[in-house]
Length: 362
Image (tube, rainbow, N blue to C red; front, side, top):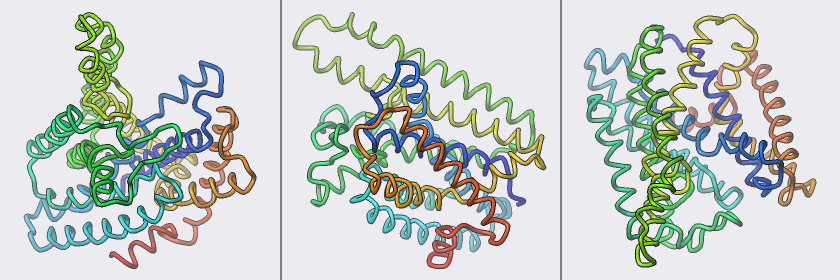
């Protein structure tokens, strides 16, 4: 299948958003700016990462489209093994990253891919059911497992991470991007990757549906404090009310069902708009440059920690910075990364980290 430039353009948007979010978190700049800028920057929280994960699911389906269409079990098994090897590569890279960047997504991303590898032949309905089950299991765990016991969002510390129990809890339940429920977004991406997004009619049907879902979720999140303040009739209910309220918020911590619907719906809208732009203006320079940037998304993600945050750390500019400075630094890094990607793609088909992964994992 011919590569769809719009998906690469969407990857560029997603990784740019993740860089902006990570820079402001690393600089503790989230509350160090004017209110309007805090609100604007807050729109990216959890949304850019959700978009990144959904696009990974899209890629898994596109990679196996011909094998699924032909019923070629041998080819499907080959794709599954390749995904599992790549998951192993990302798992190692991700855990090497954690001491440097505690909010790393790659080690969790590896498990999304690994789980998705076993569902390549699943029906569309099964993908949605598994995604819903992941969300339900998270809600069940949240009700009794002490979500905030280890996670410290102030200093990005996770207490007891390198113990067996800590590793499992961080990965599955209360890390920054836990498998439950984030794998559901990957599975939704697999569903999206099976749709004929080259058709404008198909794109707009999905865009309208996703926008309605996201809008409804945001409305529930906006009214949920009012609803549960009414429910709270006494001190004995306040803990339960607070827990319910958190699950009905559209924030990524904790990643409750309302967050998943809001972030997932928004991500799908942006992804398909990017596909539409790529289809309408494939030769436009911004589209070609954006697609080149998206093709190197993994390299840019790794680079934003090693090069971007590394440079800022050497300059003494990590921690206690203004939001304006953090977003400005992110913009400079993104521009430099895009320029690097465009130049690199003139000489090489894949980015440095993408090439290394392909060399090691196939």
